[in-house]
Length: 181
Figure 1 (cartoon, helix red, strand yellow):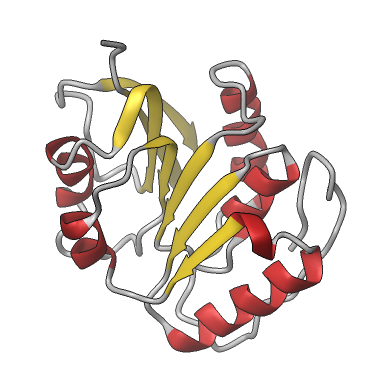
Figure 2 (tube, rainbow, N blue to C red; figure 1 turned 180 degrees about the horizontal axis):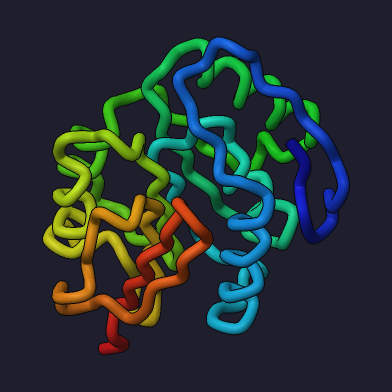
């Protein structure tokens, strides 16, 4: 796997083979960040990466200038890999790593973020609760963007803050925005 843009562009990292993560493909990740570059200034923003997996999305965000990054991942092996990679990239001072259940984290979180990314397991039974919790718990700052990665069988177009959808084969990104005050 590699970082596709920013300061660390081209840097490769190799996650352990036996982790329960499904990394976002490079094509989909590149498409996502092209869309984000046209929607939000990533320099200096505060981000939340839910279901951090390999950490790939947070590494991209850090590479492109995000200043305050929180990543939540509950699998200990995956979490330890992320900690190691964050240290190797030299971004530990801007990363808050949380080894915890995402739903419990969201329910008790009192912070707000400019950008939230959720890359849950596609077969997660309660995947549809994620966008609802983001807005019920008011986790996005005004003009903030929330993106959830899912398969075509999930459809969030009828939710109030839904903005658009980007499809990359079996990977779909549903994009939501928090209106400004």
